[in-house]
Length: 369
Image 1 (cartoon, rainbow, N blue to C red):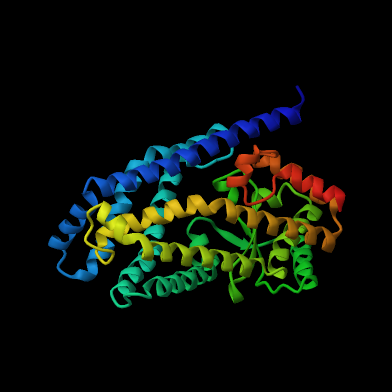
Image 2 (cartoon, rainbow, N blue to C red; image 1 turned 60 degrees about the vertical axis):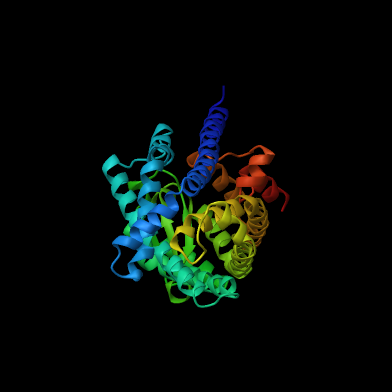
């Protein structure tokens, strides 16, 4: 058996584990939310917090904290399997268990803070806008997501990775020249110490406005040629040039607005089903979460399909701008092997989970260009 075939089989097994765990994780979350609501624990927890809370302002954060803690404890084995055991089993991670645990704590605290702000806004707006709250909170969530995008490279990424200005001046100059050629304004090019956690390769064009920057994983910078890295970044810049971020924002905005409107129109029956006093009571929080989990299950294939179209267009622009067809193909082959990517997934898996065209499709497209 040839080495490439062995690598593809290994990638297929790894991917199948990932898909299975993702499906189990989604089903498990739905089951936990339904059980929490149907058992009366959601209402009991609300009553208990209301009794011990001196100030009503503390009710929402206390309730959210309790839910976060319960969910984390109950999902810890599955989380450990997905993010630690599986990655080490397939030699994709170099992270020690202590470092993994520290990242879990940092990630949990960060998720709590990021979730608390829109949740608190939800209950604040709900009590003041009886019939238009669904639109008001949707607008808040959309703007909040933009603020997060701007702050991510400055505040969030440094919590988990260290990065510095790229020291390879030849490569840095090439990327900056490419940005000028494509009329993309960036702060600079940075190298991120990805290898301390993972052996996978990645590159990103992150931030908004004056926080916009290029991040290159050291696992990519050290193993790929300058041509291959240039075509990767041309793809990332193409998203900006083709206004894909705006298009995705519009898609996500429609999904958010539709989700909250669905809650607005149908929540009376759902509240009655689980014997909850009303949406304005914090006991409704698991119900709202259940709405959005179920809604995301339904809308995910559509969002993935739209994303695949945008990614294909970005590939085409990158090839047109750089003319580096051979580098694009070799880069795709390297990425698939290094990241154990499923090059040709089952059509149902592609339909539901793939927000990028599969590797084999991207290579075939490049050969036709």
